[in-house]
Image (cartoon, rainbow, N blue to C red; front, side, top):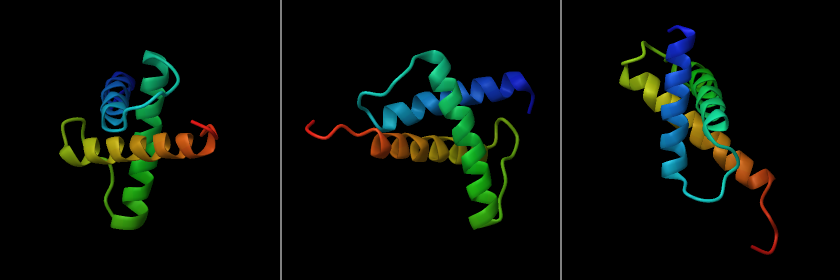
Length: 87
């Protein structure tokens, strides 16, 4: 998967993760792309470590599931670390 594929995957996976976990999160388009790319990297690592599977091609459902799952985990960690007490 080339750099353009990673950017598109990151934008869509980050957007889906933000839709699955609505709330106040930082950033716009660039942060969403970084969230999705980071999620794909984390999801690929977790998939390889825990389930002996890896990211496939761009159109592979496994790739999208791992990327969105990793992005959701990153969002969850962000919210736990930067949670406001009193909200």
